[in-house]
Amino acid sequence: MSAGSDHIDVTTSKKRNIPVACTSIVVDNAVADVAVLLTVAASRRLYEGSTHIQQFDVIITEQKPAASRKQILDKVKGVDALFWCTKERLDDEVLDTAGPQLKVVATMSSGLDHIDVPALKKRNIPLGNTPKVLDDAVSEIAVLLTLAACRRFQEGRMHIEQGIWSGVGVQYLLGTDLENSTVGIVGLGGIGQAIAKRLKAFDIGRLLYSGHREKSEGKQLGAEFVSFKTLLRESDFVIVAAPLTDETRHMFNRTTFSLMKNSSVFVNIARGLIVDQDALIEALKDGTIFAAGLDVMVPEPLPTDSELLKLPNCGKCTKM
Image 1 (cartoon, rainbow, N blue to C red):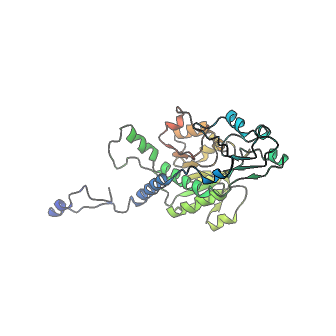
Image 2 (image 1 turned 180 degrees about the vertical axis):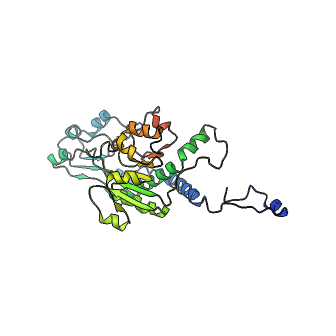
Image 3 (image 1 turned 30 degrees about the vertical axis):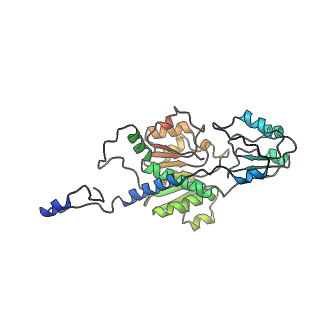
């Protein structure tokens, strides 16, 4: 059962008039999925440094490990501008510590759940964010995690690392197909739309989405607006691209996971707190869902003894 015949002595078979059959196109989609996965994984790069910072008196708090809140508060005293690239909450404490001379705040993120927007408005401090800048990058990560989860990439990597890869059997590490599948996207904003555009290249069967209202962009993508419960019940792949709000916090829990297919793949590239992580671990362990791909977790980074790191059917990839 292979496309290639390099392991078959075709000449000997011909000499004995024994026909040789191969599965020349059966594994095309699976191999193509893995090829895309590896290409995306290899092409992700981190660009460090900028000549622009040489034009200003810039205080950089980035450290490895990440600066603590106390270290950040020590650095922000007396600054005129804040470029907030940390997951720490920007609130009254930070603004008061910075001082009344603070003129502007910017964050390199689409979501503002870590920013106290009313506190900025109260001080008449303008806020800038990047609502579309990360759409392409995050959507590519979503595709990467979708492929990694459905093709059991994490499990295969663990087999190699642990020395338990015994070769390729007919049913070894069988995954699930994107082709002709039903993909459900929770939150069809800019990132959700970018994910949908990319996944259509995999010849998916149906594209569903849920949210507060039906969108014209959904129709342009050929997507069907459905209720959240319908999306969970009918989707083979559930991809979360919704903002973190009081309404979406822990919207994925034991109840919602139980509505999903046992064969479904869950992908989260939104916010970790949208998922009840204990419920996700249970769902992966007991087979409520097939696999998961996570770009966001709680906490970040995960403790080295986290159960998520030990599960073969959970792939992790963190934003740089």
